[in-house]
Length: 395
Image (tube, rainbow, N blue to C red; front, side):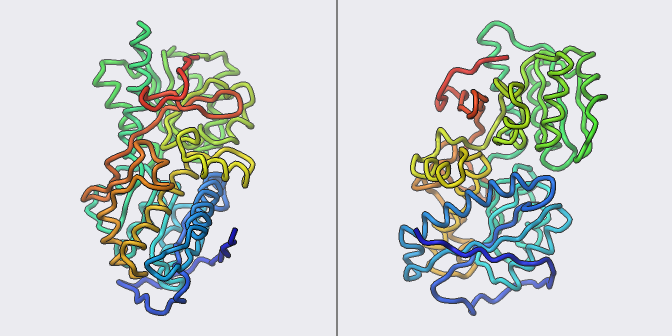
């Protein structure tokens, strides 16, 4: 297996309206990666980097970019620990590193900042982030492989509502809590609208600040209102605080997480028995991914491929296919090829629905959220029924 060197870059910025991409080594195509590789959300960025690097390795092993004479992909990462550094790091990747395209960021707020730069500098950005705004601003250089955040929120509610209704116990009261960045607010909007459409009372609808350290007041409010289901939309540390606090206070109603902090192995490790049975929406899952990718990921990194790892690997595969089709390292030509994407081959098939096809806004129209559940040390797909690997258990 060929190892591809990863070159770290420092922050800095020289903004430009466009970049000339003629000074490339003929045998390398650079792909920029923007992720939180340090800071409070580093676990997500590292998972994403692992998925992206494995995708790069697999594509290179299969001959690289054949239309460019077998040119190899090279991943060039930029660490973006907080959203306010996204613009500088993205500009640096384009103006100094001459990347042909960029994949990332995990967080919607950082992706929104980065996409302003990629649009201005005319370099394609393929992202896993959820926020609706990513593909509703009329941008031509941004592509979203996952559904919109409001769709995640709506399905986070609807999947469980339908499940409980089938069992004759449709919920009457729910609690929504969410961190107050683009990810949380967008997904909560979808949750809220879906619940209102079904006539379900929302007894708690609370935003909390990113980086919260005391969830006691929030949990006390939830306990006093006695909801039938709780829908938290959280990153990692806040997810641990919320679930541990609720279980320790005897709140044992079903909890349906909003992806992010609820679908990584660190969540299980951090909560122990409290994690078992927790459900969450997700953009993908290891039990639906191609076996060659899922098996290699676990062998290489010692843990199952998380949804952020899988979806970012899909983003790399889609970008590589566009480079292949364009037969060029020119970002404009690659962008045009991305706009015509309609693929169900290779790693791209790991996305729910098995296909990536972008509409005129850059949104993948062929995919949908999953509902996954912790069963021991792994996540199992339990909904929709068309792709479920096991029956859901509400607890």
